[in-house]
Length: 311
Image (cartoon, rainbow, N blue to C red):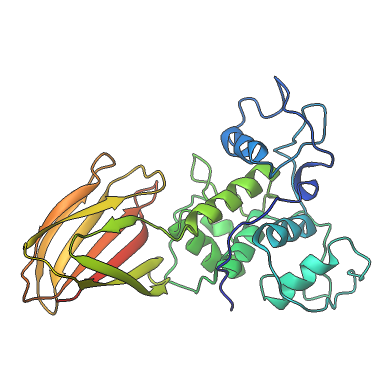
């Protein structure tokens, strides 16, 4: 499975998602009071989204499999080359090249009866599977805390669990995921925005005076993890201030833990949203591992950063 590592670049072909010709934002439109209003208006302001006209954006309208694939392909610059071998997909189909690219990259597949069903409404669990494949998520111990988890198809459970762990796809306030429900346009934009923020290479802006950083490996088990090696430069102090700046909103604390190499835990603690730095006392003769865990809105671990402090 190939892992998507590209950035959102260029303008979104908005006609795929929300209408055709650009319109000026109206004083009152169908986004007023909508739960995704802020994110959708951000996309409109950035020129990545257009409406139908007459102040209509139809945020609650569902989208089709072809529309979602095209939206993702053109947003994230998929460049796979291939052919589509489905009974209901002809080269003249308006989404043929995008679907061919997605198939070549192994992000989407068809049905057992030899069809792709481009005009079928894409379900929330189907969207989860496509997103998980695009991000290269591998199967991990399942974490399904939704009240309707039993409604998930077996083929979607790993993907839904992975997106839950990464805080990319949320359920309703009553903990319903609604796997069979059609994905709405608002949900599609919110999902893509979450993916963009998730793929932000900064993760957290970390600095430790006296050290230089190199990133050496990323992993996805048991949660998305970024690993660094920190090599000491000239220094004379044994106490260093580690500054952690989170580039996205968190609603629960993050934790940190410092352990000696092959030794016991020597320091640990919790940081609230308001606290962005903490001090660690290091022995210049020892190596350490600093682990920082960022938590999702539900209080579950969402991301982990490991820093190997060499001496």
